[in-house]
Length: 307
Image (cartoon, rainbow, N blue to C red; front, side, top):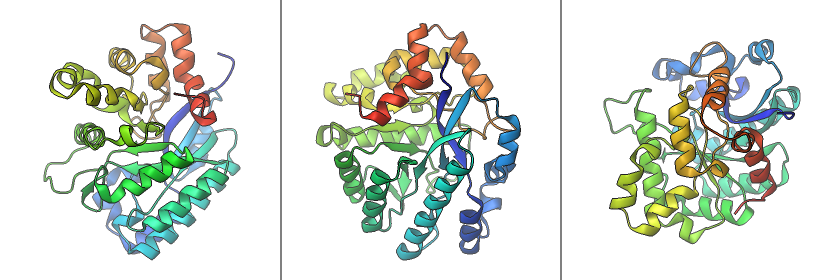
């Protein structure tokens, strides 16, 4: 493979943004210990381990200002955080190909403005949404204008899980995979792909539980809804596990799977890039399928050359 692979789902915690957020919510490090991972903010650690074979698309970890600030402040934090993401990409061009913008879902007007900015800013490749926002499913009609605007502007959406705070037993082993799966179901049942057939949504963690429960989807849901599940794009962030990757590719098709690692999280010090790329080599895939997953699908998605 002559070109570097593209990891579409890697994370950072922009230092200036984080310090501003801590002023609003000083309990964050205790509530979410994973954000203490040094390589999220100290990018010299990642630089020291960078081997040149995989470049990353960076998005903020799952902390969004809408959960901690009133609309005007949340919008300003997203705007300054997005500017910092662009600065990071420009500072480390050898490691990062672009960033995914934050949006404040408690200010839909500001969210629309950020979508317009993404359309113009070459370093911002899409927006990140979470499986729940403001105590509601991301599929709630409240957020329909965001999907409509993204579809109209042909801006991809990165879908990341968050805990459902109504549940007392959230955990990072299984909860996020369930939340992704539930959000996908709710989006499909809302008719999102019927209303916006050109919409592109990239789902973290290989689409959660969906490939494993493909037959439940096929036999229980209406035919068109079952088909709509295959319109999502998914990444490969499974910490390896070549058999699970084969299952994801078999379900979604190799043209809808993109390399994603969740770096630097998962495996210290800088994430599971080696484990996931090794699993893709071990998986029963053709060389063409591997090329699609490693970089071709990303290139087509960014060029709008997909159906």
